[in-house]
Image 1 (spheres, rainbow over the protein chains, first blue to last red):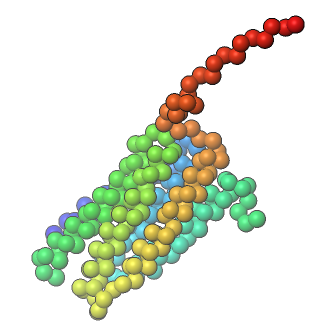
Image 2: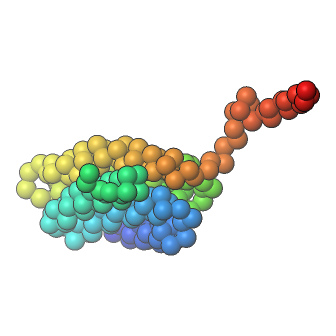
Image 3: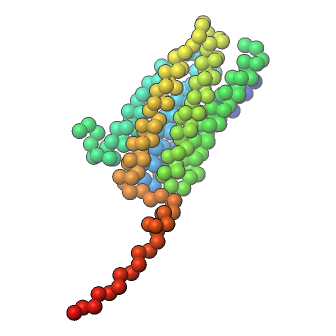
Length: 89
Length: 120
């Protein structure tokens, strides 16, 4: 039962990746593209957590934590660049 | 792993995946940036939150002892999601993106045309 649920969850998260990537390619403004990148890293965290459950390996949390940290820093850096024209003033 | 924990884990995993999917679906379906900003925050809190609870339960049962380092990821996402959403909203306002919401009535009403001042 858990195997079937995990398979379905993997399919749903993969579809979420595809939808966010569509917005990343299409997105009319730069803010839309940053939002799509933000969603993509959240999807990557979800995928890593699912993979950790499926392979029964706790190693994937370190990767998920690192992606959470670096994704936030990336979003803030891109937003600051659009807002101020510079990242570190 | 007995049946009840397996059912609990399956429900949590499916709920998390469905919320993640809905967050990305809203990114495609909604019409303007300000509504689009609303969707993925649900994916980051509810979706990843459910998945991390599921994995915490899973590793607490199968591994050795209580597994709590998922809480770190949850805590970090819950702290950073509002900050990045706030910054993105500021970016959208700075870029002057238009909202599909109609203007308030007093702003949208056309100004009365000024009566022409006769030239002396």
